[in-house]
Length: 339
Image 1 (cartoon, one colour):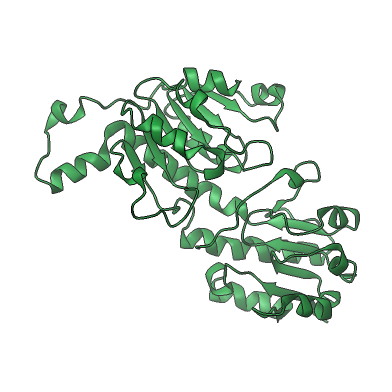
Image 2 (cartoon, rainbow, N blue to C red; image 1 turned 30 degrees about the horizontal axis):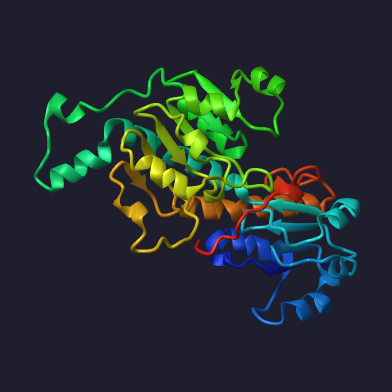
């Protein structure tokens, strides 16, 4: 008899995260029951007792989870641990809560490196100058350019994104400092990096990457005081969560024109057409597209399927990221609205 999986992946779709062949494998191995778009609470009241897996991130209060006697895992394919379920009940009753976030690490790291090189060498600006028939040749087109080699790098956060980015930076520089309150200084040093305070990072580093998850403790942590510590010609590269940054302070700092930024995430998306941030000439903009690759989404299906097979054999999941008891209650990610 097949194990039952409830399918409720919104805002994802199964076509988005599974190849046709992998989805065929999934249906061959498991019985899929699809959650409706409406009256979900009634659906879960009537069906959660059957399920061994839930593929999705529905609201799961204790009153529902108590009925889920067979439930082995909630597999969050939105990829953020949301504040919408009784995690304590899950931890106490052996229900894994996992997320597919690792699939985005490499795509985000690669484009972050691309942003960095483009900002340092004005690749995007030179291209636009050429299209506008205003190109500058040779040294004249590089008067404000510099190398990434030997630059002092700061990583605000050293989770999946930071770990994926470091191998890409190492050919250029080994001068990497890290701020991550969830990792001990001893462990940071053991990994070959320098632990620093945020104040020292913003004062001394020439390229700063914002890579942390948003928590109850770090909302708006990048503010006017830190941003004004940045040296002229510094790079500020925002790759993870917009809520980490006070955008009014960031906009005001960028208006000075002496630093450069790449921004992939924004407090409100889509960004308003008349938002003043669009007027900034020293910013490389990206519309929350760093991780949104078809390859990444299809990898979601791969790791979901592999972990489900493991858990069906009473083995722990190893491909998706598991919620941690000490930290999951602190996370405050904003659900994605656009794939």
